[in-house]
Image 1 (cartoon, one colour):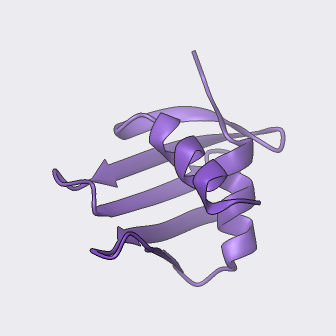
Image 2 (cartoon, helix red, strand yellow):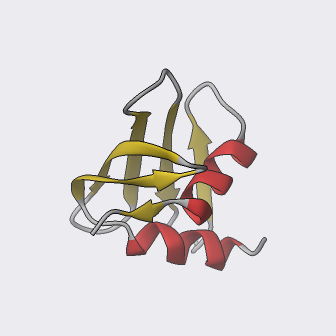
Length: 88
């Protein structure tokens, strides 16, 4: 999975709170972005269960990015962002 694919999927998620689906479950998702776009965070909770997804993404001055999952694997974070479908 290319970093650009993950970042593009993250950018498509609406800022603030939204709901949608991942792996057959409904999630509430909050996305926050700094005004300069360098700091991004996501917190998602399975609305009918106990699963959460949480991370921070930092864009560095040299153009690189740092993904910092909160007590979970990077793989879980990437799978969620790529597989999440916002509700209409």
